[in-house]
Image (cartoon, rainbow, N blue to C red; front, top):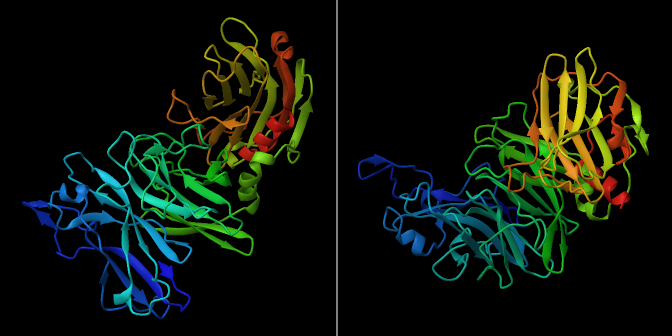
Length: 479
């Protein structure tokens, strides 16, 4: 929806004008072909205009290749409208012939210079972007859809969109959307890591302070699944480009297969909400402002987190008495945070061992792959999680935070200020653990082998999960 200063509310959607439900004797999806149309309400959505106003949707190469021969178009719009100067923009997706199942798709934008000022809907002017015969595409795959955009401080435009390649795409426009960079996978910063995402909705929003939030799934799946949990990254503009923070879990459902998606944001009086739906139930969630501001301030955070700190041993040796840690099955979380110089050595090595003969315990091991492994057990249930391989090199000191979050039942690793995302080895860097996993550390001695104690520094144990931004701050404080 788009609201004008007059109070009029506009809504744009795909309308099946020809009422096609079959084609060549086969049932076809009926909600994504026809015309892009507009209706309006002057009574806050209680009633809507009888007439539909069709937006001009010129034929492009992808339209002429669709199985209707271009008439009607196959197109849908879920992009949130934005105001850039006096112009309104929103994104859409065009679909070509489904012989390349399912797709192909390309991104487009509709823009109007007078939607918010012209009282006669028939006189509203529209333009389809980009110019030319081809929309926004993916670098490799055939799917590029659900474009969402924001305006940059210099007047440029930036958009993100989903693919089936395991990564988000992004593009910049410096001419009002007539042309775009790319196609290129989205990065956390220019020249940095690609942002992983499956074929699920990833949306972007600009806030009143000029900073940005990106909500996405943070894993490299290639289909519609894996829409839980939802992650947030904070964006800060520098030199005409958006630099994204390491992400945090924003929303999750206890059932891993629940599909969370199609979000929007509300900002009011310093408070923030996220709306989302699984296409049958719509929900709204208030988000802790500390999490959001932590994302935006992450590049400058150089403080050690103090809240929930149960133990800090600068040079742990031999046996170190660990405190009792919260029960993950009851929603409790904890964090182990330390500096480690792996050094040279054959085989796997134990860094910390807090297992006991009664059953519960935890252990941290260094693997030959250059990864760390956290092993957890409560006497009945055991589980484990590993950091990304190859990050811990023998010739330098590394900072590690392993975060056990009993809400979503997820373990995350932050190594040298970077949240593990799986790299090239795995689709994702975060790992779920069993919902049955109970108390793993009732308190007691933790053995630290001599070869590890020579290389382990600043062991901190927290009786809560650290936010990613806090783990980044711990890393930066020790640099």
